[in-house]
Image (cartoon, rainbow, N blue to C red; front, top):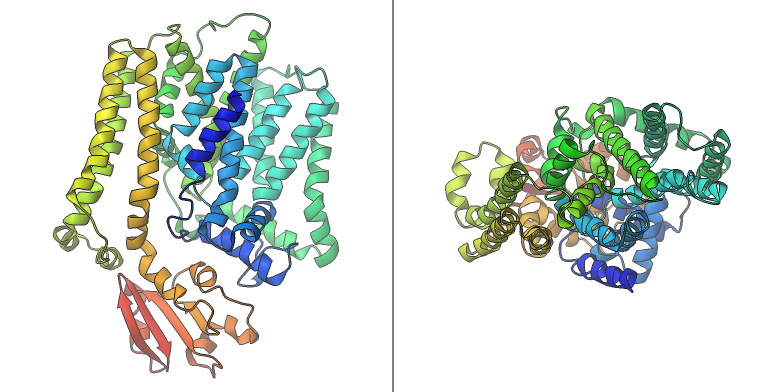
Length: 541
């Protein structure tokens, strides 16, 4: 019954309002467009973008989106629905594993720590690939851990390999790298006594190889090795260069996890301070619990350090940390709620400060919207200035949302100071869930209107028309998805110079950002047909 209850609550949290806002460029639209093109081309074996081979990602998540689009139509809801289902499966899985490790209460706390933290929750309402990838690789590592304690270790090893293969088919060989590093450092920590035999490791590798070969092997047999070679080359470039301009400091992901995984991240800090103390749990399962903690701790540091070293810095690269982080946080929360661990004042102060900072940011959003005319002169980026010109309705009364979150955070921390621990913890987590829902439904659509709304409106005006629509001087997938582009009959379409100055055979339209528009404004072949919120629209004469 509890599994069903968690599934229902998760569905209520993750499924509604999935289509309330346009897909965001790049990642959300990237994967959704690949799924749409699978349906249009009837080619489900190969990932395509703009009906050209796209070797950056394997097809599993895109297959899920294509199935969803077949059920719900080609739209935002369908693109995000697979992650909502993964979100339901994730919370049910966390409760089940937590119950098996310790008890029902711990399972509930773990599910709540995950769903009640900002980024872990938010990602299940998105159309990006990482929640599905993270779920598969977590299950692969969990099953590898279970081989030491299962009565059928070979079966667990095979299941681990299957999940690892599914993770590879979702995002690529980074799943293998993370798994190998996790196993290596776990082996070092345990001084070689890991409880997994070489035969079982071999079974994991074989099962993973067979699973990934279902697609990679087919691709090589049908199209040759070049596609896989390009795929591998891209993965290497992603690790060694600041791809797409996404650079950052070594501590980028540390800050992302601290703020983005609030409030669970605060309890992780308390674990760092108290994690080495003797466990208060005893009994036949104590060794299993201790071992799982080691696995989670190793996984957390492997992912965090690995993606701190990687040159490309994108928020969701460290999202696999959400599983071990939420587990270790739930470990602390469970002990605090059971009054077996003291929640120190510094923990509560840190929680209060981060919560106030997030609440203040939500509170200031409407203020910025209402008084944007006072802010614009102080912004030196032309594109950002023009973005803020978008007509988005704001009311100063909307500050009540952020103020309400601040009030609930204060109430929660006051309860914690007064030793009403369970009430305080529940207040913190549930208020965050409420704030996340309000942000997604109320604020995100307004923010999207500033960042890309004018461009999306322009693209949607060409849906169903047999025109050429192309972007200039910036990278986007939005013009493909929102025009519902069909495969071009004329291959010259892929030559931007031909579109700009050649003998085009269809009405041809362009869009660029305002800061890049100068050379196109004076192009004798183009005429400006509009300009809005940082985007300039052109038509071939």
